[in-house]
Image 1 (tube, one colour):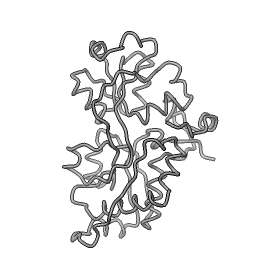
Image 2: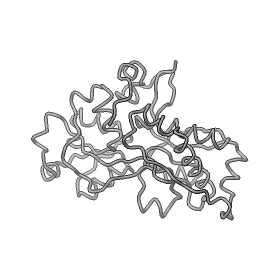
Image 3: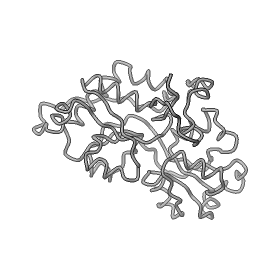
Length: 281
């Protein structure tokens, strides 16, 4: 992954909540790849964008109860989610990786050795938690991906599972204290690559058509590539090609709902470099 993020700037600006798991910053600004992309889509579509921090483990309820209109937070596309919701075109490549303490590198140098531990941590409701279940390992569920790293550092967990996008940022690129104690294991725990997408409620075809059409436009004009370069994600962002189906969509109520209100509410969790807080200028 190209290291386009200026380490010195991040060390000075990134909120301790997002990077080091400490107390919340008193005056913060929400930034990140998905945050900037969502704002660009909103501007293109002529609606404002509002961000609502949610518990990822209850994301289904947040969406279905209309507390949020979209789940846009490095969400892995799965067949189950595609059957339940409207999902955008994939926009980023990802995979689940194992994080271990550097001191345990030889102790957990094979998958069998890893599975001898009953202390695997992942964010509850995440693709990592699902993978741990598929492996037959014992899950320690935490409320955010960043907490996986703190569980490892404290010794409460032996193996953490998280998105490679986040793991590379915190361990390989950000210069945070995690890089001195933790490592991404070379042991491959997932057999397939994953793709990030955006979710809307099932049946909201008109809203998703607008989102996909805008994403394709922002890819073609270079906006997405520019945002990806800013956050060091140029090698995992995906090209988006989409032809609008607007004229053939009979039920446009989901988009009418957005335009009548004038804004899209997006559900997110803190997840650098996708969505995180920095000290406001």
